Image (spheres, rainbow, N blue to C red):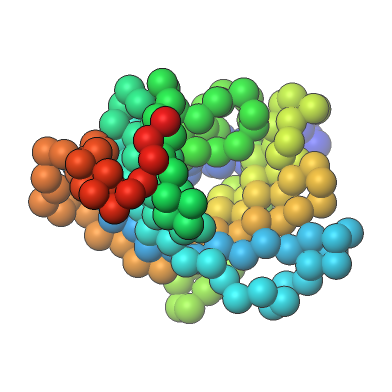
Length: 207
């Protein structure tokens, strides 16, 4: 009993903090987030600092999102996911969002993914660029998950997500760090829809 009590209290604290973050970030009508991401994999010889961070940006409104990352644009309007590959000038339209069964965390689930399939506990408390960042360590309950652990860094002052570190079963470590944040901006009604004519004029193929 003596051993399990602090662990139980820690679980409650971790859950309360995650719930606060989810409540805060879903209270915004929309969010515009800039981020950088980096990948390391010591087993494959990819060490920290070998490659420059990859920049991206995303607009989120409820479950809808527009993500620009790795020379592609991902548009999800709540029903269909459009993937625009700018290098190949190809557009794929898929019914529904990404497959949630593959174990990865996608934008529409970013603030709720922890509610099912994870155990969690408080991790390290760090000061990064003058900000108090509390990490929560999340471990998938499914032992065959592609994800071994997720470390979610939360800025205590704002209850915003500052950093997400994903450790994969293949020894890969992906670190996503928020570099800019704006909320409740004015969006057009078609912000998450594909303008087919615009891309057809640029000779994109649509599947």
